Length: 88
Image (cartoon, rainbow, N blue to C red; front, side, top):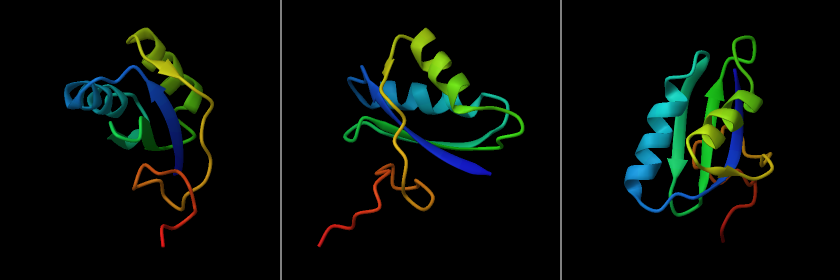
């Protein structure tokens, strides 16, 4: 299992975030997806033998969202922060 965090532009409300979550989780090999409207990010846990971040990006582009360069970092990406820095 791997986790990839992507920056997503074009989400306007929680409905968009929910749509993206359902779309990503419907992809073969995706175990879970957590989408943050406020952070404009999605954290996707997936089986690298069944899918790849490139397929996530293609699905998001086809759905009308813009995807920026993937963000690395974070132990599991569960917070959708994708950063290893902790707030003091």
